[in-house]
Image (cartoon, rainbow, N blue to C red):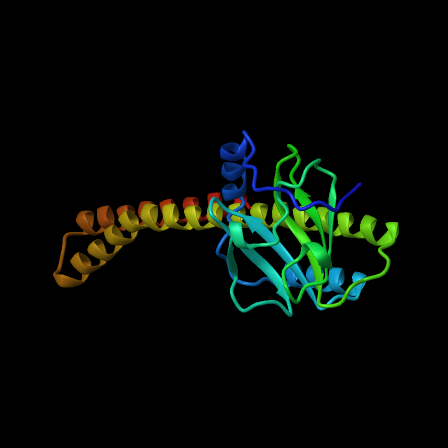
Length: 227
């Protein structure tokens, strides 16, 4: 389905929920990533356009995650952008012709990036300084496919981030848990080397050192088992 009318900026009733879901992906204000850049490159090649962009809408600004031959800025105010978040039906592809576009832009097509719950996270769009006489159904279908691919990348990226955070938390916990036995071993070694001791006291400290080492081994084994 194609919509060629520029919509007004109508904030949907579920915007608070949409923003919450978008923020969970931790994509806003992040650096360029090759996977997203490649998808933008594919979109531009598909339509043979000057520019392609993958964008996500925050509360007040559009964040451009990937831009091909576009402006240097990675953010645009919603009121000043071509962003098509509120363009109608979920599966709508937006196509603007030159009479509706800002000066210097004569062609613009965008497809929504939609999550599993039907919330529009952003758009993938192509823009050109020259008019395009024809847009095929195949091109539109493929742009929708690229939008779904972007959503897949968001999901996989989030899984990877969560795994990294979990691993970092395990390492922090391990470092904390190892601090006491390592400190104990260090203390016992210093005591053993500082003066002569009775045999029974030496054996007692050696046993404590062995216990501390066993605690360290158990912590490390548990860490490896969790992976």
